[in-house]
Image (cartoon, rainbow, N blue to C red):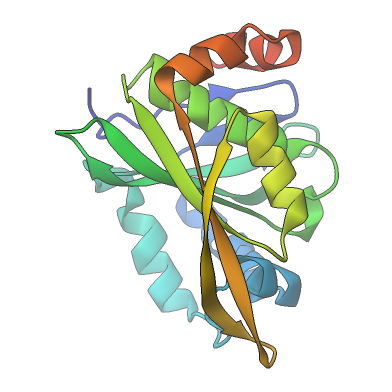
Length: 196
């Protein structure tokens, strides 16, 4: 198993691929979107292009994580990112996160990207567990995770101070046997089979 290989994962609506220099201005716009900032709990101060160029320019060299751009197949535009990180090699688990900008929302791209990345984690990397956190004020993301087989494990209370109120985070995960069983679902199987 190796995170040093940066694959291209192809679904019906989305392609997940390594980042290029041309993606930096697009990601800068996505990361500055107020709704993306609100739903992901990202810092409110904007990232400089120089900082983003350095960050995304180094993603393909990382051997302990996988950062892929989410591309809308219909338009060819980058609409977000999907990431496997915090790899625990000894226990065969890692964390997952995704963000989809306004141009890719409400069309199933995020749901498909979650399935593609999760399928890669289990079927190609041989992981046993993939986990994530989702803020309670982001039900759309939680539904996408549930469609990919993620199960809520508990609530971390008041983890984000935003807009003058505390926001809870739900811890979710999916295990390899659960993914294999979920994959048998016709919709999940259709998406996973195109990721190879």
